[in-house]
Amino acid sequence: SLWLAHRFHAATRLWLILHADRLEDSSGRVLARIEDVRHVERGAFAFKPSNGFLLTLAEAQGRVWAPGLWWRLGRRVGVGGVTPAAPGRAMAEEIKTRIDRRG
Image 1 (cartoon, one colour):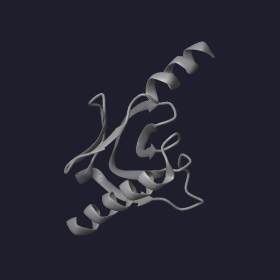
Image 2: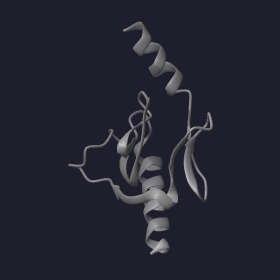
Image 3: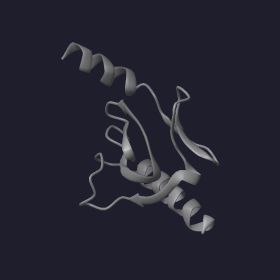
């Protein structure tokens, strides 16, 4: 439980950055490239972190977990947890807008 508490504390010191071509955290780790995102889910019944959203990618990526902030398992990236609801919603909408513009 000490290891988990340490990981949670370290992850919550990070923040998320949405660039024109990718979503990454403040450590520089890329969560997903916008060109790889196929779908954004924010619904109440989506398997997603609280106050967050779920990205579905075109191809499976490696497993990574930043407790309380984001996780990636295969083709799914869950963003949220300790993030406030309004910024999470705005980021999800911006990613969805970029996907829609892409065609």
